[in-house]
Image (cartoon, rainbow, N blue to C red; front, top):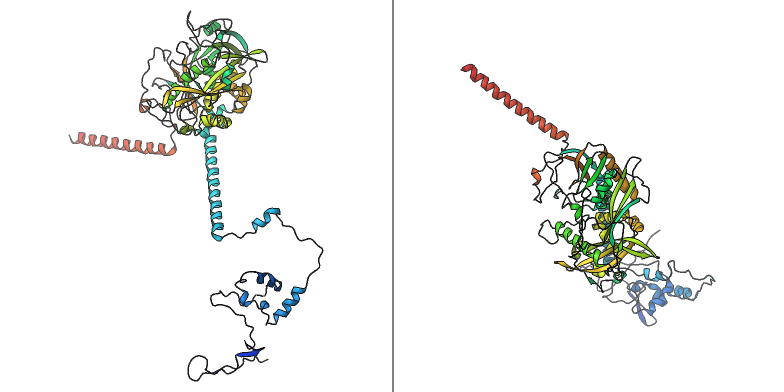
Length: 592
């Protein structure tokens, strides 16, 4: 088979085609000149040339192409559009052919959104979306890693869900100075507390109720940030923080042998909620005969309300700062006392009980409070009596019920991240969730005290400063009531675990000899230590600055193998040096 190349012109005079072509380039047809054997389509040099041949084109597309302005850029090589070409006849035949089909056209796969998904996206925009998705994936991965490490720290600390939110406590001081003559008897990590459980008979036995109560003013239920109330000051009403052994009623009950263990609701709540605590606190324990008394020191940390104790953001360390831990504790205690008296109906109508207030003098105006002396049975030989406080009374379905009154305080929205004036009406749950995160121990102790006192309702007041830099003037933004058992379940407060902690501490102290002991929460670790102290400790003590950290007695630390090896090497070097000195002395003596 021979392929005919055709006539190739030759130019003997130089480069390029000859002046006279070897064959005719144009053939006249119908009065017009056309290239010989070449289909011709006119085009401009400004047009971009596409593919040489397109065998995938549909000849029926010619009608649509002709309607478009100028067609496509490949139209110059679409010979189906050229009437002079041999394909034009086939295109005409194909255009006249129609397929008869009764099937309906296929519906879009994704419904009405399908047409929007067919839009081509620019490559740059698609790359930006991919990069944005990658960044979101990196953020999510970093968040999961952070939660994973926080959970690991929580499991190591042993706290029941609150240790993960602990801030750095390495710089905090102990609530009591550890003296050199004290003997540490035991240390108990909080991880053992979370596994304890003990059920007490419910309800306990009421031995005596002292004091008088005023009724709650329901008008405060309508207080909101737009209708706030100024917090009043009650300087004439006295509040008492009497420890266990100074209570004349408890002394009388102890003399009558009504129980073997005596305490107050504030002390018991500190024990029950110990795994949630971060700051240091201490409880004095006295073993007298077969009886056990849980006391607190004068000016103890238990008399003050902590603020942002379980928050991750540290508070200023300067004691003079109005936002320091000590200043906020004093401010919160002041707010809580005044709030508990302002929300009452002060019309002189009071509910009295068996005996008057045991700590008030005759004619002295006291705050509205009632003390319930209640007894719980721990085992056949051990009963516990506690003095519990309730602050008010209210009528529910025609029956009078006890109520506790407490106040949360906002000092600066920058620390909590939630502005109460904006969120209390629309996002009340978010405000409470933030307080549960930042003040988990305080809310748990309030709930435990209300459960011990047998109250049915607990009113929480939301009190804020008039201005973030003014810590003297405050306003009440809202008062919200909670059913006690529902609120305890909401904050994951298990009564069996609470009593399990108390029972374990009581059993441990019952094994000790007669004397005085102190239970101290470690300021840096989630654990408590028991020290044996002299009998006259904490008596006639005066307020003084705490000892420097280096002068306080530190608990014995366990040395690892490396430290032991270093100590052994140092001891060996010291012995060798001492031997060398002895040898020199012997040599000098022999010379003499």
